[in-house]
Image 1 (cartoon, rainbow, N blue to C red):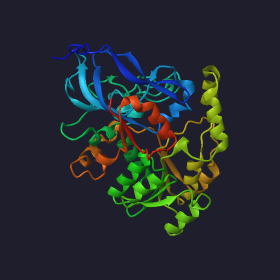
Image 2 (cartoon, rainbow, N blue to C red):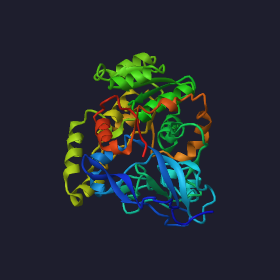
Image 3 (cartoon, one colour):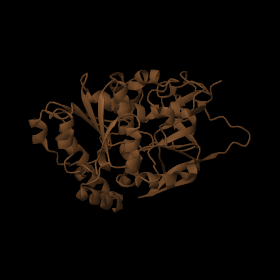
Image 4 (cartoon, helix red, strand yellow):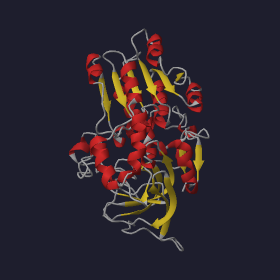
Length: 408
């Protein structure tokens, strides 16, 4: 039987625990009202696992002007269907599902082109942005997120990804973001057969991108400055360079490793989290402290990103090569070296991952052989109550924290 309201067990709470944003650098686990079915194609999911993403750190600081106290965060959830609207036929109560971070309808022109991150049904016209995202600011619809016990999911006949019973959540939860984002980043890099890909940043996306590219037979050179990240990639056979040893000569060293030309492609998995760019770093901190009425237009019209990683990618990639941007940039007035881009004939591909576009290609790799190492990908599994501490540690790159999964 399909229900139009969440089913209630005896003693089932009418309120749930969720991680909420309260201010710059301040997230808390609060009690909030349970979500309910609002439209006939909605579903309610009881969240069993939900990832902490590097993009969440932008909410922690940089994008504060576009958040309100009490906003529920998180965009990497999976769980069990608790209730469905009367028009839902794709899933049933009790099904195990992963929820993509894009809120996409599946039937508009953009979705039909596989551009789910540009869904015309959920585009946020007030800010001129693409598809709405779970748990990600007014810029992307201010949709309550999945670092919570329950999650309302619209478009129940398209959005949920049904996965089989049996394997642990970690086998599938990364379909929500990490796997398709890394997959798209590698696909957009378009490395020719026998070519070389440089991956900048070995956070969750960069790390997974190295695994995908190597699985596809590509030579990968990865760059980071966190010892635990470098060792983790090295342990899977990736050539790694420590940025602390090559901060001034990185491009020269990589050219020496690639016949003097540079790699065929560079995947920037760093974005605004790049070290360096002190002016942009100060700008981010100050903007986050301004009143929203001042900070919002400043970010919209004159925001500056930390471009250290992107500038490095432009310097490193060979002439005629490709730069694939998976790292998030938020500046509206970034000073790009367009002369160098033009002179080197560099192609740049970028954008939010179109999650559902890549699921069919990725799913066959989520087998018992586990070629991408998803079962051991998370470094920390924590209860939701520990989320505030995890955000702080993740931002400071402490405790060997590379990928966190919360278990509400």
